[in-house]
Image (cartoon, rainbow, N blue to C red; front, side, top):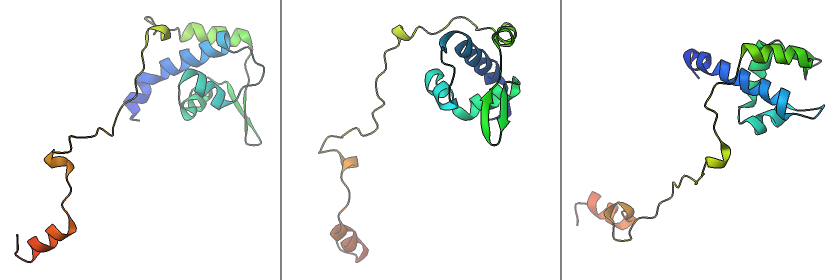
Length: 125
């Protein structure tokens, strides 16, 4: 991601992660991947965001989120959720189809045979 793209996403990542930690997480132990799966933010971006917010502590190569509720609330005021929020019940997902079968008579769907290529190379038709 470009530096400008990262600057644009930082407030979104911060507000989403803080909202998750304050309102949606009732577990005492979470992994970065848990947060990533539930917020749809890449794990690397969550680590970056938590580090920028001063919430990420690393002890012997193990990451810890160290924050009490008051600190999270203070940071949430600094990075408020911007409206409008997406209502997940209104989203209708359909898979992106990449393997569209073509009509069997389509010129684009036919691959030249090995014999035809050999004949062309030899000057024959």
